[in-house]
Image (cartoon, rainbow, N blue to C red; front, side, top):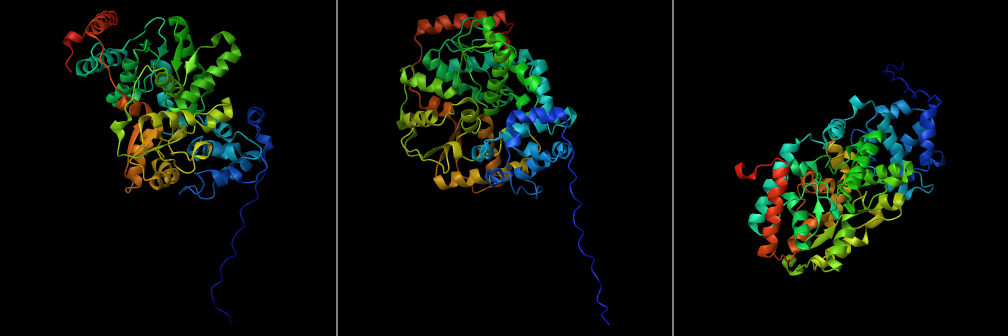
Length: 452
């Protein structure tokens, strides 16, 4: 007689019962060609999120099938849309061209605002209310601009100051709140370029935030509001062009919001230029001079930001691939490519708000490809054009991959460090100092009594 213990047969998972998708969700997803999905799985094969520890069994194909079966609530409640960086590798490979990042963005939109992970919703609300993600007070912002500008003038840029609310400026520049709050000296790179080029530029006194966390949280109304704020300021001040914010999400979000504003009213169209085109323009026109010999003996590589490249190309017809490479070659003698690159490049893992969200380990898993790409180049310096990419590659990747050995520089930092700087003549510097004194008095900033 067989007395061996009997094991119960494994239970099959319950069958999925399709549900009708809410009409408003179905109609919105139709904008992203959702119904064209063939469930082929190409998106999952190209997605760095696939296989994320803790998300076993989840991938892009599964999420798309869940949505097709009406399981919208289950997707919205999951972490998957928030782990999606919106890098666009899925749509780049999709044979039907489905805008999968757009679908994931709408899943974020459907999440209740008080359940948005981490600080993203709070930062976005701060921006709407105070004009920046960190709710930095106007007085503190202006005082910091005045003090840091004075230090730069005293160092090696006589006559320099940060022009605020300058009427009819040629260039409008938006700071990043993390630099205003803590990474103060990261602002100097652009300032040195403006100084060397003798640019007629300005920053706003209010509503100056470069980063658009409304895009990261799927908040369509706030995305439009932040773009309209920039449009209104430019038109009120008679400004010629704005430099699109360096943050990939900031520039892409601004472009999306502006597109919506122009559709609503063609009079909302304003001039803008991307940072790459602006730097190319300055170099080619001879407004700044560079000495690549200062970078001799070091190898440099370039990281293609998803939102500056692949996603801009797909949605607006032009991504920035060759321009940054041309700029680098004016600055360095030893440049090597990552593989793959350009449209096929891997995301660093910080996009879609992943840098500030509470998914550090997941973001580091996403970054495994980027770490290996960099390591294979043997580069001493990784050059980037996005603040989130920079923080991820400089801070998070070395934390999780200790063998990472490289320095990270913004492309405008590299340009600023390669500048042949000609200080302004005494008369020119004197006129600028008088302008600065009048400006800070008008804005209520007393530099005489500041300690720095």
